[in-house]
Amino acid sequence: DGDYPRHDMRNDFDLMGQAGLGRPGDRSRKDDDRQLMLESLLSARRVLYVSWCGHSVRDNSAQAPSVLVSQLRDYLSAAWGPAAVNDRSTEHPLQAFSRRYFESASPLFTYAREWRTLHQHASHPQPQPSSPGTLWTPDPHVPLTLDQLTQFVRNPVKAFFRQRLLVRFAPEEDTASDDECFGLVGLERYRLVDRLLASGTASSGLQSGQSQMDASLARLRKAGALPLQGLADLEQAALHEGLGRMLGAWYGALSEYPQAAPRQSIRLEEGPVLVQDWIDHLRHNGGTDTPPAWLELSAGTLCEPGKPPLARADKLLGYWIRSLAAAAGGHSVAGVVVGRDAVLHISAMVEPELAQSTLRMLLQLWLDGMNAPLALPPKTALAWIKGKETAAKYRDARAQYQGGHHHIGEVQDPCLARVYPDFQALVHDGRFQQLAQQVYGPLLAWRSQHVLAQLLEPTQAEAAEVPA
Picture 1: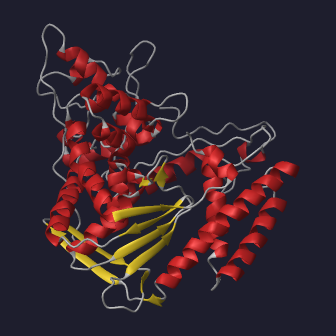
Picture 2: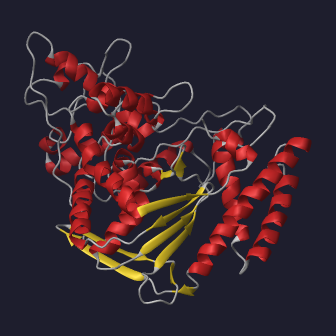
């Protein structure tokens, strides 16, 4: 009360505030706020949630709500009786550690699990209240796409926040950098390479594609996207050489599959989940003994450092799910992916039963992940299942999740940090270990059987970025 509706602070020279000079239609913040309250009431469809600070944070004295909220409560009480207001009003404790949140049969609920743990270890522990609500079921009129399933497997917690809670954590605003650019690394190089590849593949031939790519590279240098002077010369030469090899491999793949093929329809049902999508960008070589293949050009690196070349498992999630869906739908489809460091040749799956069972497992996992966040960060899960011993599993997985001096941990993702703030919270119930083996074990087996990596010779600048 007193903060909303807002009071007009009129100046002495404001003629509208003087007696007899006001006219109908003059601006009034108080009337504007009342109109906003009315619009909020009329806009609500399923739920209208109104809250106010009922007690002072200084002395815990009672505080009245806004006069608009009081009028709403009085109207409901006059129309349906005082019980209609009392049954719909909940008084929450002022502090998150209040015992009222953790008492038996308490209607209150909190996400502050650290205080729940404290009360459970007290001398008189109380049972943990269950989360309200019923199990979520998907809308049968909104099918699941392969891209959505891939994004879920890549980060189930983020998918839960976005699709169920409709929460998107906004990234921090980038401030202008005062450091001079001496080279392109990480995300900057990826974005620049992606833009240059888009210009180079817009042509119908290798020579014209290289010409357009060089012209785009020159324009980006004039726009300040590259370092200055001699460093820009080195960077431009490295980009020209690396992108030239990528375009050569891309047009080589196009020549291997010269003819466009019709896209394949995917429609699979597993309980309440419906998967419906297309496998497009298909091409074939005209022969009857070779299956068609989808071709993709990626601006990122695809292989792990070392020999023999081995494709990075975290980069294969989308290709794996696409192959599973094609085989489960009865389609024999191969794939070719051209990246900055290698070309991946993905053979078609010929085991429809295995593909169907694996895809059913992923769809059930998606259904579970839409009801509660699942602990499955990909790099941490891969480090866990690759470990030979239990101690090594914990050490490598903790390093991937927490991060270190040379790399950023997956806990930096705001959704993961909100649910699993540290590695101990991630693994304490054993669910992470089970999910890691359940999902990434079949992925690694598929990689060993169906993915062949062929390295592209790196430039000197690119070789300097790859750790020994």
